[in-house]
Image (cartoon, rainbow, N blue to C red; front, side, top):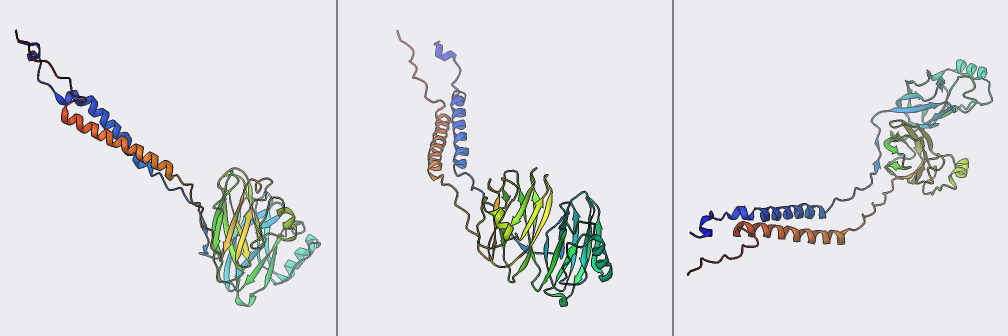
Length: 345
């Protein structure tokens, strides 16, 4: 009996198993590579769209500078407005809204003179807010107060004299719009494009600005449409053209502040961070009012790179499938060498 007759029958699949596994592995490399060759569409920067206010609540922040933020409020006539008063400082402040319109108190008055005026003429609101707390007060403005202006101030001694006052301007505009923005430690606003469309001018725009990082910032809106601010000119420019709003965004992730402003007309308004060095590092954005925002820039083309990846991956896929099919059919790849027959004497 020959040596070959002692061996068991050939098992093609066992012989082909290493090659079959290699083919499947090669095909497995090709499939995800082909799929990944198409990549992901680069994300388009977010654009913030202003929407009508759901209610008539206006947030007023109190600081120890001492200041109110915002300083100027625009309220539609014939509405009941809730003032949400937030004390961001460590001293007590008041929100005292004078009862008579178009009265501007003299900052040279003593605290006693201010108290006497408020006691004699009354007030629409007079709320004391302790440090680190908040309070609400609601005031109704009927239609007879259209286009009037009401001054509000803090009657805590010498806070009014130091600049803690502001004005509620009554207008015949429709209720305002609101939107939101975020500040980051990479010196950027996210989004850096806001869109607000209104059929009436001026209108009130409220922007909720939230800090996503640790650094403090400001949200400062330029007062004039279609005027380009620069890191070298904005300081002197604001001396003669006060911004529509300059809200201080407290440091710490999650801190927020309302930036409330009155937008006078259509156009493109630039907003910046006034903290030293932040604007120069690129912290700016644009508000498009009744003007279409520019289309997003197309992403860099990777068509050539993706084409080569696609071709190479397709070749790997085809070779792997062919290798697996051949080995499954033939039992081994390459096939075994032919064996010599038995010798005859």
